[in-house]
Length: 178
Image (cartoon, rainbow, N blue to C red; front, side, top):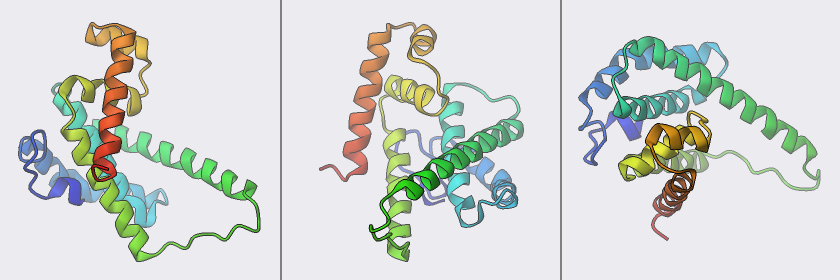
């Protein structure tokens, strides 16, 4: 989990949240086994990383009473999202034209994907706090704009602007600043 287990120098990273390092060490192996038992195989590391990104975002918003329970709740949500995504992807592949050549999964492609995930994790960490909160609530917790607006004490339009700015900044950061 390169984006989380290394020493992060960015504000909001592992260095700024020493509990996260402890959680990764304490729950990481069990979390990877949890995903492997559910058929994630080689993706278990990536799924675990996603759980810890979500955990870090949630812990930045407030204390978590039952970390273990919360981690495995997130893990089940992540796995459900992955299964839904895979089902859509399979359907899309089935519907794709048969004459299109399928891209092969190469070690280079896997490495590039992992680097992209790591850049995304760092980019999320450095978003302005309110934009990060609105983005997290909407994209990871699937909270509607109106509910986010109520929770944050702002208008729906302000939520839209915060999320729009977050998406724009994330696209710039992940694409390498281009």
